[in-house]
Length: 360
Length: 165
Image (cartoon, rainbow over all chains, first blue to last red; front, side):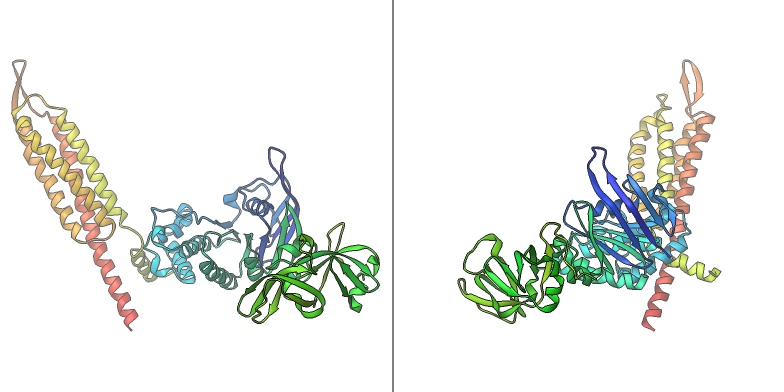
């Protein structure tokens, strides 16, 4: 059992810079939570506060109901995996994995069993006599994870563990972490700036910006129902297209386009009649149709899809930019006109940037 | 865990854990040898024993330390052949008691008109302790390494047989 609760956590540095504002989160036992956001948003700071490597300026941290806000890092029963592996170069893989237990003066035979079990899980059995310098980046990261596993901690903390790996290895190691989580059923907190990692790994995602939590939810919730414009733009690749538009008589009028609203959308925007809102459309929700004309500026074939970049209408101003992921292999030339429609629309309040949801 | 299981795990650990016991005994032997030659060189009273043997002794001490250090690295990785070298070095340390210290202890030299032993009783006992201690460490290191190597080889054979089956 390992339930983690972060209650009204603030982080204020000595120079009065506040890195984290009123962070609240309840992590259930066995849950994998991913903290995602751009650089400097406070996600690593939050993780380090949980680990005990940073002081918590305000708020409470509870582990299984016990207040550990002031507990030293070594007594928190948490294991952290760092981006740079933090392995001892002069020790073998076996010694690296056994190190924390050796420091605790555990029975050598017990250490041996734990190390072999962890190595078996991570596929490192044949590498145990090697030094870290003899392993690939992915294998080194697995050793770092193995070092955490042998401790059998209540909570695993990962601080951008895949950032040092190349794209192919990152994908493979990501799948290994997922399998590891399923096998161990452990509570994990994972920090990344990579939304693909967040979407593929997380049970729930915490999206952060400028020290504030923007949204907490399942990957699908964040993708499908972003709470605000920031989440909408951060989650999804390529990011969501956004344009200012005015709600008028069952239509949305924007720069260079007018598109009809269906009954459900009209209901959602009922209190915005005549007002300006922000329309968001994911590139993959754009289909060939007849609502909007796009002037093509670039055509990227991705195999199953084609990513078309262009501008709405004929003008090429920044507020008319559009990216559409069209099905199949398309061969549009620069200057071609393509007619499209929006299969799914997201609406955001122009002032607060919060998502507009149907009332009731 | 049963005793048999404990024994098996202890054997299996040798696949990944270095033979630090033998290695540390080698370091201790080197240290005792350093004590020995520091104490013997400082007692130079102009005796011919030192004039004749001092060069050879220095060379031997250097060689001894090199070989003992190499052995310590060898036994750390369970290399059985280093046990033989350690036995030889250990025997050499015992033999050294009878070469320089014993002869120096029995020899007399005139200092200020009076005849005194080149190596007094106190110093003689001290260097014997150093050399004998060094020899004991080397022999023990060799013996431990030999036994561990045999046990590890047997364990690896068992594992191979299990894998083959």
